[in-house]
Image 1 (tube, one colour):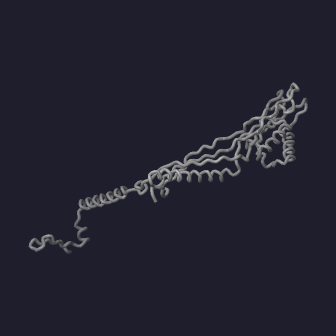
Image 2: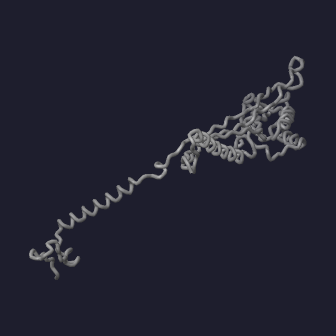
Length: 270
């Protein structure tokens, strides 16, 4: 085995002849191995700490933060009317729920309403029963019909009068292209953020560079109802005392208003 030799008489006092690596490891004691392991662990820890302390390019780049907003108004083309059909007695004769529903469907088809737009208000088609003289019950069922225009809605009111429907009201309005419109408004919000960053930085002779961060903020789309949301159940022809009823208020819808905001961070300069 080759040993390490230090020659005091040599002209170079710092000259060492090292033993082979396997020989050196064989001569290490347990204490030496533990010390070496701790030293290597310390070096690894220092390397990791240095890597974590490297500067984040996003944080080191000068930037500007702005909020962009996009808005759009559109006329709803999906109007959902909810109403109730309820069995009734005309004297001793009972008008069944099945007969009322059949009559309703016939009137809707005759007036060119799509029956595909007629649905039950409750998925389980729940019936509401009312006891009558402890021997019979009156059943009712809630429906929802979708129409596209206020003129269709006016015609529908007349049909509901013929079948003596109750509790008719517009439950909600929507638009058939709502997802496409939402995308357009979001794009407007992003563009608005870029324009805002540009004109703010132009005041100090700078301009907005690439986008560093973009976040969509919570949005609120209010529900817009009709001016006349619920229709009176009194007959349109004459009041009970024979006097003429006042004309129905005109049905009008406010526009759907979509509003979105984004938070953006742009680098300053190209």
